[in-house]
Length: 187
Image (cartoon, rainbow, N blue to C red; front, side):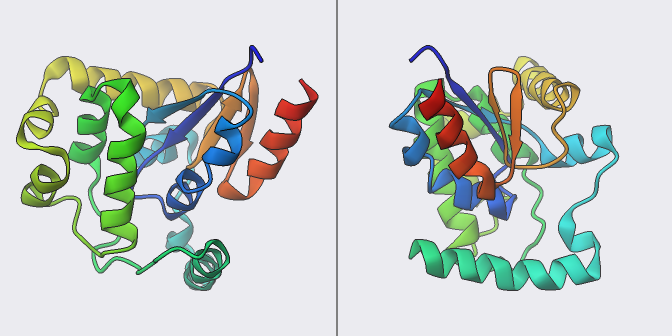
């Protein structure tokens, strides 16, 4: 198949966490490119806000996330630091070898969403990603690349995370993976 899936995510996004755990469903049908971006930047560029900013949505989200964790049979513990500042983490992922991004991102997701580790703490990031990669997060070229990917996502229509693209077709949310599977099977 000539199609690929682009997976735009931020490790501070709970729905990106649950999407990342299900990426294998898509990888069986097409290559998946993990594209770290800044959800806060996408919110700003699109005029959106995080769901928890709305009290009713925030209250629902807590229950919904636990339901997803139960359904997927995966650990989940809402982090004590929410939302964490994911800037350094996302820069480090941007600096990483693209082949390593899925493994590294899954380590960050698990640390934050299952173990309640503060991913904005530099010591936690060094423990999870290594000193060298965390140091690369301060490189100007890495900063510019993350900014460019965030702007690209927003320009293409992203307004939150996770956002997927199959060609020019955008899919928003963990709950749209089945539609991406369907589209890939039809292609």
